[in-house]
Length: 488
Ligand SMILES: Cc1cc2nc3c(=O)[nH]c(=O)nc-3n(C[C@H](O)[C@H](O)[C@H](O)COP(=O)(O)OP(=O)(O)OC[C@H]3O[C@@H](n4cnc5c(N)ncnc54)[C@H](O)[C@@H]3O)c2cc1C
Image 1 (spheres, rainbow, N blue to C red):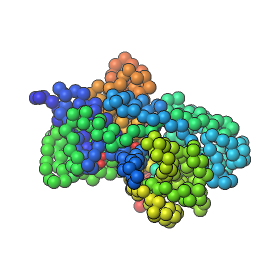
Image 2: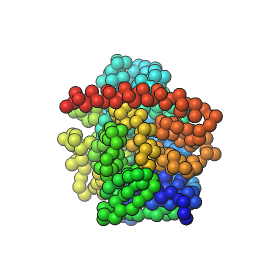
Image 3: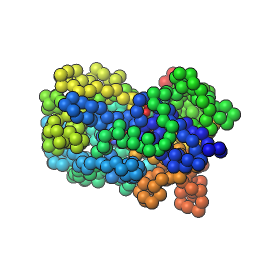
Image 4: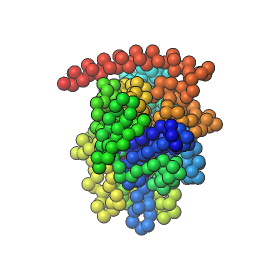
């Protein structure tokens, strides 16, 4: 069809697939190509066959009821989820606690648990300030003990934002949101036990099938095993070369891959692109999927019929965390098989000397898989997030992916919708209040604009926020410059 804009989406993880879904709903406006480095769509949302004819979703597991954009997208494709009640076992022996029983540690730390509620409310009220302060600093300022920080707050934070073993450096405002944000909170803060609920979550269906269904139904031209090598932006056009040196020309490009890849393939990235994307910090983590009960019982309190999540602190580095999962209490096909399939994630390969992965018996290992994930340190919210808006749309280029804000499946989906909307697609789920509220929020923060300009609250907010964010961003550029100088 003549007059259609030719758009390339680089990467087909949750973000790229969501962008493809949105754009292809307008076949009269867009011709959409998706180039994917791997053989399947889905990005980090993958499945693997394991012995005895079972499969597992080998990384991404599930989400909560507030993942409205993800859930709507799945519903559109006839995909169903399975309910799970989140049960977590933290620590071992004297440091053990859970979200479903009272333990000795909870009783010992009762006064601090009570005080933590006040601290969360202060952080939440002054979010604009605390977004730039790491949680470990705030806990120190408020006089919390090492035991409370290392055994309760850091393990709990790691559960949601632990990538790269950077838990102490996670932004305090992000931690407060887990408890206090009306739309996002997973747990109500409990003044006696910290956590006392087992919130209902959902487990994804087989993820490789899910993403193949979304991509094939979209009708986008999907090219697997086609990695982008070079991107040149010249006189209003985008010239893209793949690894076989084939070049094609597009009107727009949506980068739905990681920030490191963007900077590697972009010819002549702007100052802002280098600064913003270069401030996303990635770490190497490995998951070992295994059936080693001895390992699990040595390091965790295992309640076989209950827990999906296990978190422990390293005895020598009390602020470093290891996490495990009982996938059989998460994924329905494993529940039915009667097996206990565990997964342990070892974070940040620079801390390899404290990893205990060698203790997992080789014959019990089902799968080892490396991941490269960004961390949620305060720096991410200071030096990357506020600047994303200044990149969007410049030189016919848009950016999506969970790294633009927070490492969740829901944010990845929302970010893909947002990039598509900026190109002229409609937001697909306006009838769902919570889905659209979260989408609008993302639009304001990451694109600096409302879903539609007009006489509405978000337009006013966008206009009012613009100079404030500009001043803050300028200030952050200076801070970042001095920090870099000090490091040199
Ligand atoms: C192990 C693990 C477990 C997780 N568990 C959960 C969970 O339970 N719940 C939850 O909400 N979130 C979870 N997350 C986070 C969430 O799933 C991710 O943030 C989200 O799926 C990322 O989607 P994305 O599209 O932003 O990036 P990705 O999924 O990383 O997609 C990027 C895509 O770009 C492609 N690509 C890269 N370079 C190129 C190139 N040069 N050319 C073409 N294509 C390229 C990649 O192959 C990939 O397909 C988990 C993440 C990980 C890693």
